[in-house]
Each structure stands twice: as C-alpha cells, then as structure tokens.
Image 1 (cartoon, rainbow, N blue to C red):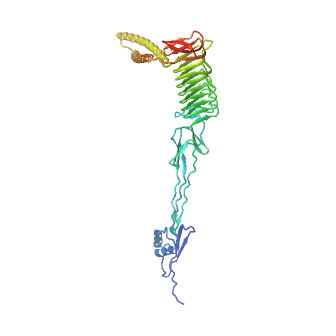
Image 2 (spheres, helix red, strand yellow):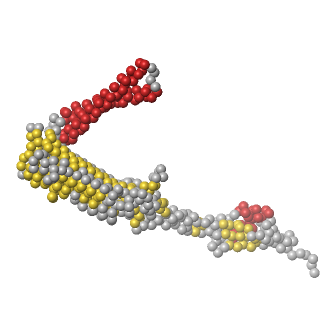
Image 3 (spheres, one colour):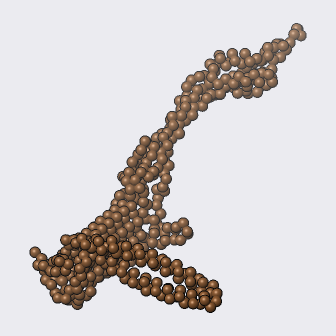
Length: 460
C-alpha cells in the first residue's frame, strides 16, 4: 500500500438566484498541496455562467485574500430598475368646506359669518400637478435589461370655471365661489342661495352675482361685486352691490345701495342709494337717492320721506290726503343748494362757538393779570386756542366751497317732477336752487323751473 496522500484542489461552488439579481460563490480549502483559490479562477467560473454585469471584484479579491473558505460570498449584484413616480395633485384648498362661525385674527367669533362663500379671483392657483416620472431601467447580472415600471399620470377633472395651464397648474378661470363637485374644484360666477339669508346661511359677501331665492331677514347683509337678485323681500337688512339690485317683493326698514340700477316691488322706510335709476311700485317713507331717475311705476305712489334724483322723478301720486311731509330734491343744482345751506348753517354755528371761546380766553387773560394760571386753566387756554384756530380754518374752507357752489348754481338743468294723477299739499319741491311748498292739490302735472320759479304745466 502506498503512503502517498490524495491531493485535493480548492473547489468553487457558484449559485445564482432565479431572477438573476445576485450570485454567490463558496470555495473549499485545498488539501495535500492542491491548487488554492484565486481571483482568476472565480472570474472564470462567473464567465462560464454568463455573469458579466455587476461583478463585485473587490469582494472577490478580499475573500481570496482572507481565505474565506466554505462561506457564501456575494460576487455579483444586479442594478435594480428605478420605478417611475406616479403623478399627483396638490390642492391649495380643502375640498370639503365646513360651514361654521368664522373666528377673526383677534379671536372674535362672528356668528353671522358662517364661511358659506369661498371667494376666489381669476388667475388664483387652485392646485399644482406633479407629472409622472419615467424612472430608469436596470440590468441583471447577465447584462440583460430589466424594464422599470413607469409612473402613471394623475387622473384629472377640470371643473367649470377653472382651467389647466402648462399641464401643471389648475387656476381659476373666473372670479367667483370656489366649491368642490364631482371630484373637481369649480368656480361659480353666480352664487345661488336656494332659501333665505338668515341664521342658516349667515351674511353673504361675494365677489360675483348673488341670487337669493328666498328673503333676506333681520340683521343680515348681502354684499356683491356684481348684481344681487332677491326673489322674496328684504326686511331690516343690508344689501350692497357694485352692479344692480332687484328685489321682487320689496324692502322694509332696510339699507340698500348699488352702483347700478335698483328695482323693488315696494319700498317702505328704507334708505336706498343708487348711481343709476331707482324704480318701485310704491315708495313710503325712507330716504331715496338716485344718480339718475326715481320712478314710481304701476300704482306709482310716492308718500312720505325724502327723495333726491339728479335727472328726474316720475310717479302717479306724490304725497297723500293726510298731507304727509314728502320732500323731493331734483337736479345737481338742488344737491348743491342743499350742501350750501348746510355749509352756511355750519359756519354760523362755528362762529358762535368761536365767540364763546373768545370770551373764555378773555376771562383767562384777566385771571393771568392777577396771578399765575393753574395747570387746569393753562390746559383750558391751550385747548381753546387750538379749537378756535381749527374752526377758523374750517370756516375759511367752507366759504371757499360756497363760492364754488355759487358759480355752479348759475347753471340750470332741464329736469322735472311728473305726477300722472296728483300731487298733494305737504310736498316740498326743490328743483335746482328753487323751492316750492305745495299748497293745493295738483292733477296730472309736471313741475319745472321757469324764470327761477317752480311752476306746474299739464303733463302730456
């Protein structure tokens, strides 16, 4: 029997996962002078298996150097694909709107402001869209390309009144109320209140037109940058519009103002102001100012209160059988005359006050001759001097304005007041700078100014 020992070389065992993402190598210890492991032997083994990509040469060299026999050594790793990112949408507003009393910056809760309206102006960003990314393909350890999963675009719903810009931004295409409907933000240029404006809705302050299908009740306010249309009535409430206002039934004890025309079913004890025409079937009491005409249409009653119009006043009946005080002021010059009267009155009051202050200052001067004034009297003296100087300047300013008005009053306007049926005593007419207190019932007449006096002519 031979004593010669069996030579055993270092053996390499290579494994690769089914998806070809990693490869592992283990090698045995050589015996009796067998051939040891080497980097070249491992590299050759990898090439035989077709492993050409992601080979970890440093890891192989380290394992060989450290003689890491019988250990699983990761010798190749794939380059994983980078999947794309799905597109997403970022909203700048909450889709769900809560209706509750609004707290201001001072911590005060306004129980008449329920946040029902979200005003938004044209061009305001509503949402930002992030497009999907392509991602990047990878490679397995055999060098084969592994495709990535591409990002999916976000599903978009573009609501009414909005628009998509540059495929990335949703903005308001109009000014109005921002709401979320059917999975999309919408901008409504007209706000429709299906019921009343009361505790259920709170005050309305809207950038567009407002339609109230019910009424506006006590203590509540509706403000619009465009038009207001109320199907019901307005009771002890406030309306303001940059456009026109229409109240189908009418107004009682309310404040109504518009830059455009105002039309009411009836108007009782209300303050109404318009830069255009004001029309109603009846005006009872209140203070009415129209930049153009006041028209009492239909029954055409105008009874009690104060009425001012720059272009004309038309009615069927003005005043009443009970001689209720009714004041009609007509024309720019009439407005100026009224302003002039108020300025003259103010000047008289201030001159009386200046006279009183002069007497106070004279008295204090006499006290000063006897001895030093007390701190209280010194304060009184300085306050009186300041007040007198302030009023003297105000008087000068008012007199300058009166001079301007006097020049303007020289220009007469061709305006008139028409009463299709009758105008009663108790009515005071002021047309331009002329004034007439009606003493007798006049029928079917038109009041005009002739040679500086108000006269009646038949209404044709």
